[in-house]
Length: 585
Image 1 (cartoon, rainbow, N blue to C red):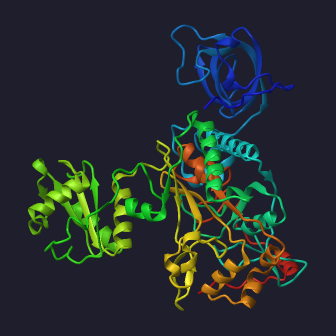
Image 2 (image 1 turned 60 degrees about the vertical axis):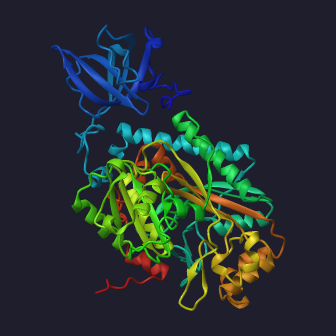
């Protein structure tokens, strides 16, 4: 990534940014503005002052700098010169030069900061967030927000190159009957009624397609009142897009181009074309619909190896899956027992482990129950080598998949932010994820997802076998976003509603404004949303999206900087017609 702060700059106060100076500037008079990052005495009167701004740090040689303290805001004028031989600093972009003959003007003094503003010292996160304006001065945070800006710029450029039009959709929206928990806003002018903050612009962007906008995008601010974690905040930003007269492949091509552009903008290298993987293949091979392609060997079907087994734990099992864990055959019995407990905690009846020794010998409490042919077949099927660990789960297919998929990550997954960057598309998700208490199908995405055309004839007779035209984009095991081709045909929508047990009156009450628009000519359309925070976090080398958001919330949803959330005055509550109930006992 090229240095920050390039481009036109000169103002009445400064000629250059600190981090952009190099040997080519030697002999030039400059004026710089920034913060005193560090002061080092050099002789009785002379001092080396490291001056910092957004672009980086440059060393200034100052005569009479005794009054300067850390984080003073100053203006420095002087002459760029090459550092003396042997004093170059390879850790700085400006390490070949310094600014000499300096005159310093203190623009504002500063109190000592409550924690060191250096990436070499870890500070308590709550303390950092309470003084986020100071935390943002650190090089790590400056770089992270620069990465965010580069990613946003690359995504916008890709959208415009593909003919998309940026349109803003409302932040005050109507409550929706399903989906994630929403933030609710009282409507002062309509007492007893409420807006919600949008979970996504989903319905609004579909209305834009009915309105003939053809190709829409925006960097959408979305809000969901859900528990926070490393990859989730109340507020998040997504590249949101929708297009008319497209099929699934068209949408995937556009989004692929955009995210590869963004990755190249940060890393200067373009990843390979993004592979496409069906949901069923992802579950069979990785035990997850968010597969991390970096995390070692894939799951292997072992039913044929144990088709005639006499081992009671395997005999008659609906599914037998195996996983090779390279080089982990040295795990002790305590760790192996912990893996077994973890497998049971994930829903498996048990876990079989085997160590691979010399000449493919298998060490395990169950090895004696397996025939020579089964032991040899197991090693061959998994491609196991001496020193490897083999894990086997015999259970219902979904259980075997997900349990081994999680153990695969636990034992072989590098940090999500660690390269290489392995994107993958997961397509052909099930249209329904199961049955509710009344035996009705539960939509896996939403009720407006178009079924796969090859499966439409089974919508009523076998709904759980129907695939959808929905798709997820995954990077290093994190879901970056999801999308689908939407239902635009009234007959298909009516069949889906009927399958879900939604009659015409209920459909009108819940989705009337969208269905009403569809009666006036809805084009075939589909879309997607890319989670900007997650993409930026991975490209910036961070494992938590809080580190790439300027003003995030803590895990408990609190903002230590402002004190939000906070009570409001009774007068305001009265104006809104809202009464606060006492806390639940």
